[in-house]
Length: 300
View 1 (cartoon, one colour):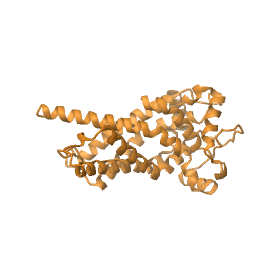
View 2 (cartoon, helix red, strand yellow; view 1 turned 90 degrees about the vertical axis):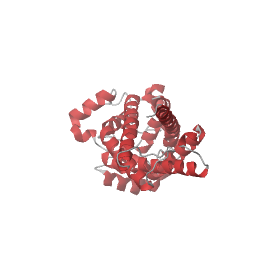
View 3 (spheres, rainbow, N blue to C red; view 1 turned 120 degrees about the horizontal axis):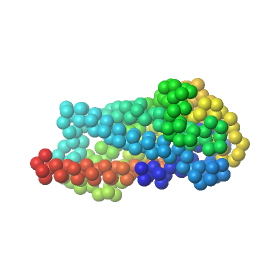
View 4 (spheres, one colour; view 1 turned 90 degrees about the horizontal axis):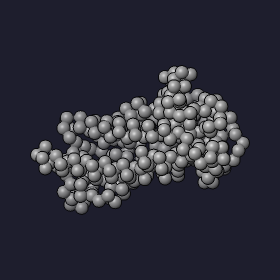
Protein backbone atom coordinates (compact mmCIF):
# COMPACT_ATOMS: atom_id res chain seq x y z
CA UNK A 1 0.00 0.00 0.00
CA UNK A 2 2.81 2.40 0.88
CA UNK A 3 4.79 1.76 -2.31
CA UNK A 4 1.66 1.98 -4.48
CA UNK A 5 0.71 5.32 -2.93
CA UNK A 6 4.20 6.81 -3.17
CA UNK A 7 4.79 5.76 -6.79
CA UNK A 8 1.27 6.18 -8.16
CA UNK A 9 2.19 9.35 -10.16
CA UNK A 10 4.62 7.21 -12.17
CA UNK A 11 1.73 4.83 -12.88
CA UNK A 12 -0.36 7.70 -14.22
CA UNK A 13 2.46 8.84 -16.51
CA UNK A 14 3.23 5.26 -17.58
CA UNK A 15 -0.38 4.51 -18.58
CA UNK A 16 -0.72 7.80 -20.47
CA UNK A 17 2.42 6.96 -22.43
CA UNK A 18 1.18 3.41 -23.07
CA UNK A 19 -2.03 4.61 -24.72
CA UNK A 20 -0.27 7.41 -26.62
CA UNK A 21 -0.21 6.67 -30.37
CA UNK A 22 2.40 9.32 -31.24
CA UNK A 23 4.72 8.31 -34.06
CA UNK A 24 8.23 7.14 -33.27
CA UNK A 25 9.79 10.54 -34.02
CA UNK A 26 7.61 12.10 -31.33
CA UNK A 27 8.12 9.39 -28.73
CA UNK A 28 11.08 11.03 -26.99
CA UNK A 29 12.08 10.97 -23.33
CA UNK A 30 10.59 14.41 -22.76
CA UNK A 31 7.05 13.07 -23.36
CA UNK A 32 7.02 11.68 -19.81
CA UNK A 33 7.69 15.15 -18.42
CA UNK A 34 5.14 16.76 -20.76
CA UNK A 35 2.54 14.15 -19.81
CA UNK A 36 3.05 14.91 -16.11
CA UNK A 37 2.81 18.65 -16.75
CA UNK A 38 -0.40 18.16 -18.72
CA UNK A 39 -1.99 16.26 -15.82
CA UNK A 40 -0.99 18.96 -13.33
CA UNK A 41 -2.24 21.71 -15.64
CA UNK A 42 -5.66 20.06 -15.94
CA UNK A 43 -6.21 18.76 -12.40
CA UNK A 44 -3.45 20.19 -10.23
CA UNK A 45 -0.99 18.04 -8.29
CA UNK A 46 -3.94 15.90 -7.12
CA UNK A 47 -4.36 14.78 -10.73
CA UNK A 48 -1.23 12.69 -10.40
CA UNK A 49 -3.17 10.62 -7.84
CA UNK A 50 -6.26 9.99 -9.96
CA UNK A 51 -7.02 6.27 -9.89
CA UNK A 52 -5.18 5.66 -6.61
CA UNK A 53 -8.13 3.78 -5.09
CA UNK A 54 -8.33 1.36 -8.02
CA UNK A 55 -4.54 0.98 -8.00
CA UNK A 56 -4.46 0.17 -4.28
CA UNK A 57 -7.30 -2.32 -4.61
CA UNK A 58 -5.74 -3.94 -7.66
CA UNK A 59 -2.22 -4.21 -6.28
CA UNK A 60 -3.18 -5.42 -2.81
CA UNK A 61 -5.61 -8.00 -4.22
CA UNK A 62 -3.19 -9.12 -6.93
CA UNK A 63 -0.15 -9.56 -4.68
CA UNK A 64 -2.16 -11.41 -2.03
CA UNK A 65 -3.90 -13.65 -4.55
CA UNK A 66 -0.72 -14.26 -6.53
CA UNK A 67 1.41 -15.39 -3.60
CA UNK A 68 -1.43 -17.61 -2.35
CA UNK A 69 -2.08 -19.26 -5.72
CA UNK A 70 1.66 -19.62 -6.42
CA UNK A 71 2.32 -21.35 -3.08
CA UNK A 72 -0.68 -23.67 -3.40
CA UNK A 73 0.21 -24.67 -6.97
CA UNK A 74 3.86 -25.32 -6.04
CA UNK A 75 2.78 -27.51 -3.12
CA UNK A 76 0.39 -29.41 -5.40
CA UNK A 77 3.23 -29.99 -7.90
CA UNK A 78 5.38 -31.29 -5.05
CA UNK A 79 2.79 -33.95 -4.25
CA UNK A 80 0.78 -32.15 -1.63
CA UNK A 81 3.62 -31.20 0.71
CA UNK A 82 5.68 -28.01 0.98
CA UNK A 83 7.70 -27.44 -2.21
CA UNK A 84 10.84 -26.48 -0.30
CA UNK A 85 13.88 -28.38 0.93
CA UNK A 86 15.33 -28.12 4.42
CA UNK A 87 17.41 -25.20 3.19
CA UNK A 88 14.27 -23.32 2.27
CA UNK A 89 15.12 -23.45 -1.44
CA UNK A 90 12.51 -24.80 -3.82
CA UNK A 91 12.64 -28.44 -4.88
CA UNK A 92 10.87 -27.80 -8.19
CA UNK A 93 12.46 -27.46 -11.63
CA UNK A 94 12.66 -24.21 -13.62
CA UNK A 95 9.86 -25.48 -15.89
CA UNK A 96 7.65 -26.16 -12.86
CA UNK A 97 8.35 -22.68 -11.45
CA UNK A 98 7.43 -21.17 -14.82
CA UNK A 99 4.20 -23.19 -14.99
CA UNK A 100 3.24 -22.40 -11.38
CA UNK A 101 3.91 -18.69 -11.85
CA UNK A 102 1.97 -18.55 -15.11
CA UNK A 103 -1.01 -20.43 -13.66
CA UNK A 104 -1.07 -18.21 -10.58
CA UNK A 105 -0.86 -15.15 -12.82
CA UNK A 106 -3.75 -16.30 -15.01
CA UNK A 107 -6.02 -16.94 -12.03
CA UNK A 108 -5.10 -13.61 -10.46
CA UNK A 109 -5.61 -11.74 -13.74
CA UNK A 110 -9.10 -13.18 -14.18
CA UNK A 111 -10.09 -12.11 -10.67
CA UNK A 112 -8.52 -8.63 -10.72
CA UNK A 113 -9.13 -7.52 -14.34
CA UNK A 114 -12.17 -5.28 -13.55
CA UNK A 115 -10.02 -3.27 -11.14
CA UNK A 116 -7.38 -2.68 -13.82
CA UNK A 117 -10.00 -1.53 -16.34
CA UNK A 118 -11.20 1.17 -13.94
CA UNK A 119 -7.63 2.16 -13.08
CA UNK A 120 -6.69 2.59 -16.75
CA UNK A 121 -9.75 4.69 -17.54
CA UNK A 122 -9.38 6.93 -14.50
CA UNK A 123 -5.65 7.44 -15.07
CA UNK A 124 -6.15 8.45 -18.71
CA UNK A 125 -8.87 11.04 -18.03
CA UNK A 126 -9.16 14.31 -16.15
CA UNK A 127 -11.82 15.17 -13.59
CA UNK A 128 -13.28 17.74 -15.98
CA UNK A 129 -13.69 15.26 -18.86
CA UNK A 130 -17.27 14.38 -19.76
CA UNK A 131 -18.24 11.07 -18.22
CA UNK A 132 -15.08 10.77 -16.10
CA UNK A 133 -15.41 8.25 -13.26
CA UNK A 134 -15.40 9.61 -9.72
CA UNK A 135 -13.55 6.59 -8.35
CA UNK A 136 -13.32 2.82 -8.16
CA UNK A 137 -16.89 1.96 -7.15
CA UNK A 138 -18.39 4.52 -9.53
CA UNK A 139 -16.30 3.10 -12.36
CA UNK A 140 -17.22 -0.52 -11.64
CA UNK A 141 -20.93 0.30 -11.40
CA UNK A 142 -21.03 2.38 -14.58
CA UNK A 143 -19.04 -0.10 -16.65
CA UNK A 144 -21.26 -2.96 -15.50
CA UNK A 145 -24.39 -0.92 -16.28
CA UNK A 146 -23.34 0.35 -19.72
CA UNK A 147 -20.98 -2.35 -21.03
CA UNK A 148 -21.84 -5.40 -18.96
CA UNK A 149 -19.43 -8.13 -17.93
CA UNK A 150 -17.65 -7.82 -21.25
CA UNK A 151 -16.67 -4.25 -20.39
CA UNK A 152 -15.20 -5.31 -17.05
CA UNK A 153 -13.00 -7.85 -18.83
CA UNK A 154 -11.61 -5.68 -21.61
CA UNK A 155 -7.89 -6.24 -22.00
CA UNK A 156 -8.08 -9.73 -20.48
CA UNK A 157 -6.51 -11.36 -23.55
CA UNK A 158 -3.23 -9.38 -23.44
CA UNK A 159 -3.40 -9.66 -19.65
CA UNK A 160 -3.40 -13.44 -19.96
CA UNK A 161 -0.58 -13.24 -22.50
CA UNK A 162 1.33 -11.33 -19.87
CA UNK A 163 0.94 -14.03 -17.20
CA UNK A 164 4.31 -15.31 -18.33
CA UNK A 165 5.67 -12.26 -16.49
CA UNK A 166 5.12 -13.80 -13.08
CA UNK A 167 6.31 -17.19 -14.26
CA UNK A 168 9.51 -15.78 -15.74
CA UNK A 169 10.18 -13.62 -12.68
CA UNK A 170 9.68 -16.41 -10.16
CA UNK A 171 11.60 -18.91 -12.29
CA UNK A 172 14.61 -16.57 -12.39
CA UNK A 173 14.21 -15.66 -8.71
CA UNK A 174 13.96 -19.26 -7.47
CA UNK A 175 16.92 -20.34 -9.59
CA UNK A 176 19.04 -17.48 -8.23
CA UNK A 177 18.14 -18.55 -4.69
CA UNK A 178 19.13 -22.17 -5.39
CA UNK A 179 22.37 -21.03 -7.02
CA UNK A 180 23.11 -18.79 -4.06
CA UNK A 181 22.59 -21.61 -1.55
CA UNK A 182 24.89 -23.96 -3.50
CA UNK A 183 27.64 -21.52 -4.49
CA UNK A 184 28.06 -19.80 -1.13
CA UNK A 185 27.68 -22.91 1.02
CA UNK A 186 24.71 -21.48 2.90
CA UNK A 187 22.54 -23.80 4.96
CA UNK A 188 19.23 -22.07 4.20
CA UNK A 189 17.84 -19.21 2.13
CA UNK A 190 17.35 -17.46 5.46
CA UNK A 191 21.08 -16.77 5.41
CA UNK A 192 20.64 -14.31 2.55
CA UNK A 193 20.89 -10.63 3.45
CA UNK A 194 18.25 -8.06 2.57
CA UNK A 195 20.64 -6.63 -0.02
CA UNK A 196 20.92 -10.03 -1.70
CA UNK A 197 17.14 -10.44 -1.75
CA UNK A 198 16.90 -6.95 -3.25
CA UNK A 199 19.42 -7.80 -6.00
CA UNK A 200 17.71 -11.09 -6.87
CA UNK A 201 14.19 -9.68 -6.87
CA UNK A 202 15.12 -6.61 -8.93
CA UNK A 203 17.12 -8.63 -11.47
CA UNK A 204 14.31 -11.14 -11.94
CA UNK A 205 11.79 -8.29 -12.28
CA UNK A 206 13.76 -6.48 -15.01
CA UNK A 207 14.23 -9.80 -16.85
CA UNK A 208 10.51 -10.58 -16.82
CA UNK A 209 9.33 -7.03 -17.53
CA UNK A 210 11.58 -6.62 -20.57
CA UNK A 211 10.07 -9.75 -22.15
CA UNK A 212 6.40 -9.20 -21.32
CA UNK A 213 6.01 -5.40 -21.35
CA UNK A 214 4.35 -5.24 -24.81
CA UNK A 215 1.34 -7.11 -23.39
CA UNK A 216 0.89 -4.32 -20.81
CA UNK A 217 0.86 -1.67 -23.52
CA UNK A 218 -1.77 -3.59 -25.51
CA UNK A 219 -3.85 -4.15 -22.38
CA UNK A 220 -3.89 -0.43 -21.54
CA UNK A 221 -4.88 0.46 -25.09
CA UNK A 222 -7.78 -1.97 -25.08
CA UNK A 223 -8.96 -0.88 -21.62
CA UNK A 224 -9.11 2.85 -22.36
CA UNK A 225 -12.48 4.57 -22.35
CA UNK A 226 -14.59 3.80 -25.46
CA UNK A 227 -14.57 6.72 -27.87
CA UNK A 228 -11.21 7.98 -26.55
CA UNK A 229 -9.83 8.26 -30.06
CA UNK A 230 -10.00 12.06 -29.88
CA UNK A 231 -6.59 13.69 -30.08
CA UNK A 232 -6.29 16.57 -27.59
CA UNK A 233 -3.97 19.26 -28.83
CA UNK A 234 -2.50 20.27 -25.48
CA UNK A 235 1.20 19.44 -25.05
CA UNK A 236 1.54 16.23 -23.09
CA UNK A 237 -2.00 15.06 -23.84
CA UNK A 238 -2.00 11.41 -24.96
CA UNK A 239 -3.11 10.78 -28.54
CA UNK A 240 -5.33 7.74 -28.14
CA UNK A 241 -6.37 5.17 -30.69
CA UNK A 242 -9.42 2.99 -31.19
CA UNK A 243 -9.08 -0.78 -31.50
CA UNK A 244 -11.45 -3.66 -32.20
CA UNK A 245 -9.36 -6.28 -30.44
CA UNK A 246 -5.94 -7.61 -29.53
CA UNK A 247 -4.72 -8.32 -33.06
CA UNK A 248 -6.00 -4.97 -34.32
CA UNK A 249 -4.21 -3.12 -31.50
CA UNK A 250 -0.95 -4.99 -32.14
CA UNK A 251 -1.09 -4.40 -35.91
CA UNK A 252 -1.92 -0.69 -35.64
CA UNK A 253 0.80 -0.13 -33.01
CA UNK A 254 3.45 -1.87 -35.09
CA UNK A 255 2.43 -0.14 -38.30
CA UNK A 256 2.27 3.39 -36.88
CA UNK A 257 4.91 3.33 -34.15
CA UNK A 258 7.21 0.42 -34.89
CA UNK A 259 8.56 -2.02 -32.29
CA UNK A 260 9.40 0.92 -30.01
CA UNK A 261 5.68 1.55 -29.63
CA UNK A 262 5.36 -1.61 -27.57
CA UNK A 263 7.80 -0.21 -25.00
CA UNK A 264 6.27 3.21 -24.38
CA UNK A 265 6.37 4.04 -20.69
CA UNK A 266 8.98 1.36 -19.96
CA UNK A 267 11.21 3.79 -18.04
CA UNK A 268 8.47 5.00 -15.67
CA UNK A 269 7.32 1.39 -15.33
CA UNK A 270 10.76 0.32 -14.07
CA UNK A 271 10.95 3.25 -11.66
CA UNK A 272 7.44 2.39 -10.47
CA UNK A 273 7.72 -1.37 -9.90
CA UNK A 274 11.28 -1.97 -8.72
CA UNK A 275 11.12 -0.31 -5.26
CA UNK A 276 7.78 -1.91 -4.39
CA UNK A 277 8.91 -5.25 -5.77
CA UNK A 278 12.08 -5.21 -3.69
CA UNK A 279 10.22 -4.29 -0.49
CA UNK A 280 7.53 -6.92 -1.08
CA UNK A 281 10.03 -9.74 -1.64
CA UNK A 282 12.23 -8.80 1.32
CA UNK A 283 9.23 -8.63 3.66
CA UNK A 284 7.82 -11.88 2.24
CA UNK A 285 11.12 -13.80 2.58
CA UNK A 286 11.92 -12.48 6.06
CA UNK A 287 8.39 -13.23 7.29
CA UNK A 288 8.44 -16.72 5.74
CA UNK A 289 11.80 -17.47 7.36
CA UNK A 290 10.53 -16.22 10.74
CA UNK A 291 7.48 -18.49 10.46
CA UNK A 292 9.67 -21.46 9.46
CA UNK A 293 11.96 -20.93 12.45
CA UNK A 294 9.03 -20.42 14.81
CA UNK A 295 7.47 -23.65 13.56
CA UNK A 296 10.76 -25.54 13.89
CA UNK A 297 11.32 -24.29 17.46
CA UNK A 298 7.88 -25.57 18.40
CA UNK A 299 8.46 -28.88 16.73
CA UNK A 300 5.88 -28.08 13.99
